[in-house]
Image 1 (cartoon, one colour):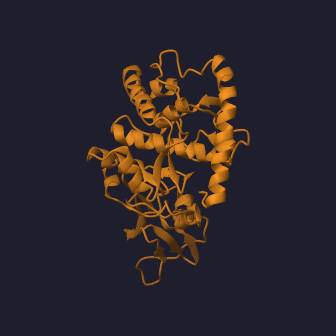
Image 2 (cartoon, rainbow, N blue to C red):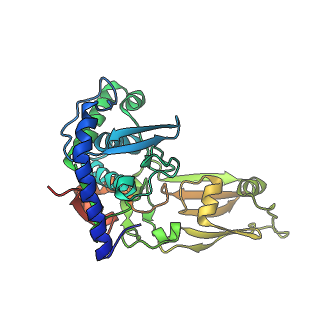
Image 3 (cartoon, one colour):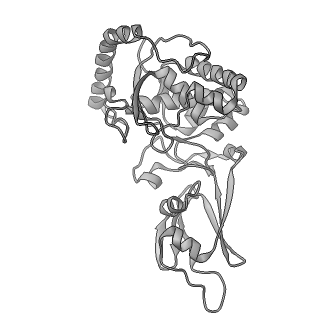
Length: 336
């Protein structure tokens, strides 16, 4: 996770300095071979100052491609956000996505993409950050709407060019998600590791997401089969079956669920059923189990819809980032 301590920080920034020196030699030759265009009709790019090459793995096609960091981030914005988002929310996402990427880049000591050792990041919402190129955005939105949104994404990236989030002088693991349910989640509850800047914070704005809640209904044996547990028996005297939430995390998400004789963690229950989040309730109605979820995603770090809610109420991207990543600072990746 994050690095801390004087020696670690010194070595980290020394690595960056050496990397920067190498890039001064490598980048001109790389640029001279031409930048990858997202499409012949894509809006023109702005300044390329403080840009870096990032190696991206595309799981759907199996290809590995090197892109300018700025271009990659615009594609991340297109894949992660809807065009309705406020500009300051988009800027906040650009800083978070840039930090997430830099934290994983191998040239800075990052672990790279879990699926492909040659790549820095995975272009996948499941294993990294969603990504949509210019032709993909055109297909999704149509020419005119795609051009407007792409231009806004480019403007947000350029307005925050080179800025990342740091904690005690080192880049953070800028995890983010779609929508939290009232509070963001603690990294400890999801991955079993405590991270000072990934702790629960209030997030009432996420409830404005268009698909904030979802309700599913299961028959008893249908649920048992989906969960991979023994058949669930209905009590002889009637009443609700032995399915209940037995624990919640400090943020209110489900920590454990008893299903008959089996106890599952909230994360296991969510994963096996493909629920949107671990913020859910259980009810017994008309012989069926009713599961209602709130929010979307693991709930850790920045909430995209929460960030948009803050931006709509006048918050700037720095205020948004300070809220979701407490104790961090927004700093330039490289000194001028």
